[in-house]
Amino acid sequence: MSMMSSRARFRPTVFTRALFLAGSVCGAIPAAADTWPEFRGPTGQGISAATGLPTEWSATKNVAWKQAVPGTGWSSPVVAAGRIYLTTAVTAAGSKTPSLRVLSLDAATGSMGWDTEVFTPAEARPQAIHRKNSEASPTPILADGKLFVHFGHHGTAALDLGGKILWRNRDLGYEAMHGNGGSPVLVGDRLIFSADGSDSPFVVALDTATGHVAWKISRPAGPRQKFSFATPLLITVAGQPQVISPGSGAVSALDPRDGRELWRVRYGGGYSVVPRPVYAHGLLYIGTGYNRADLLVIRPDGSGDVTDTHIAWRTTKGAPLTPSVVVVGDELYAVNDAGLASCWDAKTGAVHWQEKIEGNYSASPIAAGDHLYFLNETGLTTILRASRTFTKVAANALDEPTLASFAVVANSLLIRTATQLYRIGPQAAPRPLSSAP
Image (cartoon, rainbow, N blue to C red):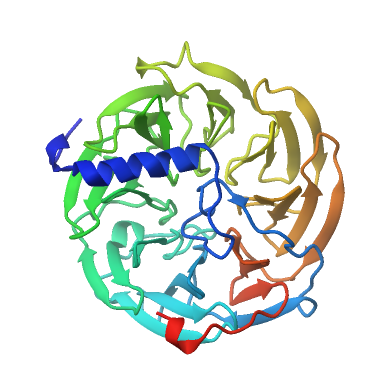
């Protein structure tokens, strides 16, 4: 395991703040309903505090606005202070590499604001990409008046909310397999993400002020297929912050100060791991990837290799390869890639129901109040009641392909399709011009 930097470089005041944030995530306390700062929202676990989210819509009904989005990308939008931020990859005719860009939109009207090129086509690193991926799949993070954007092996950058680039890092090129996918996690003044390519996978932390590498650790030896696409999750256990980082063959808990591995659970040959971990009831819910998905439920209070001692329960039927899961109350909900929706007792794994819903799934679901929202790959959203009894509330079609996960702003849903960004819900009052960044 290789290391760069040291524990001493993690500033105590920032670390204290990170502990507070970790505690907030672990308690699944959603932030204000008009803020959606990262992949899967304020907790990183698909929970929204919004009330009155719509349950009926179509491509023309209950659409506050839709805005054409240039280029391609499956990143989710992030939202704060009345603005939406979105990454995209724009490839000119005849070019083999894209311009990697960040867009700012007005949340009330959908109108385009600034459009910043972060990496030019000459700087992008051409590599083969899977048909269900894009050059702009990782979701940005908003924090402290900054926007952190990650384009996998192409590079990472920070911008201010006016679109000015503050720093860029292109020093971490690696052999991506099928493109990029995993988003970063923010821990105090560390931006942490996985670089699980086809060879020599690693996890790295960048200093949020400069973009310089704070630490970098190699993944332990794993299966032959080394590539994965998971997004880490910050939790805290007995006062110790842990960055839960799934990779091929194993999930590791890392100390965010220096990347030191705290514990590990192995899952054999599992690779191409995509789902983001979820933490509730003192348990971690982890997907193990291809070729057969398992759902592992782990007690995160161990040390070293805890594969044989800390798995609370596990299941295969209904375990997703791609979508993340969501916990509401005492129940765990999921949909697998083929559309089998499931509800388990989150603590014991007892099955309450398993029912087929329409379509194939890549996007991760969200929960708001007593509703669960599942978005399939054709743009159909199935809404279920969060209950031990299977209850279908509605099904709403946009009839446009999508692989991106939801975002929420106020009492509306944001849905990114192949060509458009939709705000589903009532018309919003425009914010005063003086308040826009």
